[in-house]
Structure formats: structure tokens, C-alpha cells
Length: 157
Image 1: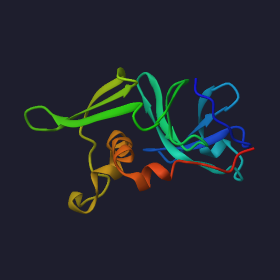
Image 2 (image 1 turned 135 degrees about the vertical axis):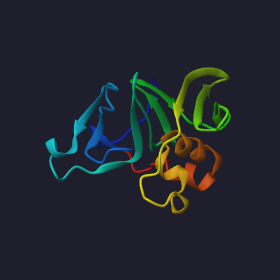
Image 3 (image 1 turned 135 degrees about the horizontal axis):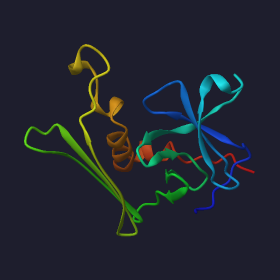
Image 4 (image 1 turned 45 degrees about the vertical axis):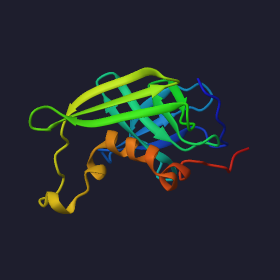
């Protein structure tokens, strides 16, 4: 478990796909729970980041004082340049499948194959794939310095 600090406990992260859910992370012990947004006080503030529910639990990225942190259930990985790598690609005969792999310190930590995420709106030409595919969004963060830097949170106690 990586050490990161915040004066806000717990933090709440938005679900990438479903507005009605949030992920509650206790920064003291790393315990993660999914909550319905309607069951929480209206005054909670959402932390910078997103998560997604997967068959094996949860995966997400949130801002911290040490930069972006990727979590897979209770395991956390600081996304420090040179320490991690992502692979994302379209696969299969018709390119309708996707594959996302996360490497940390040259070791494969996570791999998922999943179907193409369908367009939310009626005109797929007006919607960027990053808007609807969580794993492509995570991959994209690692490529762009301005996206990466948005996940450095410096107001900590």
C-alpha cells in the first residue's frame, strides 16, 4: 500500500459509468466501499478521479499529494513516471474487442479484455471514445502531461 495524505477522510470518487454510485475510500486503512450517491449527505465533495466496477471489484485513479494513484481494490500504485506502463489496444478480427494491461515496475499487475463500449448518444461521430471507455481514459492520462498533472493534489495536512 502506498502512503498518501489528505485531511479529508474518507474521500469519494465518481463512478465513470453510473452517476448514482460513488466509491468511498478510507485513506487511513485503504478500505473501499461502493455507495449510492443518494444515501450520502448532499454536502460531500467529490475527489478528483474516477473508478469503475469490474467483476473482480473496483479499479480507479485518484489525485494525491504524490501524483495520480491507481487502485485495484485495496492495492494502490503511485503512477510515477518510469515505474508503470499501460497497454491499450483494439483487438480481434473486427476490432470490436479491447485489451487493457497495467504494468508496475515491469511486472504485469492487471489485464482485462472487454467488448467495445457503445456510444451513449445517438451520433457516435460526435462522441469521443475516451468519454465512454474508462480504460482508454486511464491510458490517455499516462500519455499527456497536462492530464497527468491534474492528478497532483498539493493541499494536504
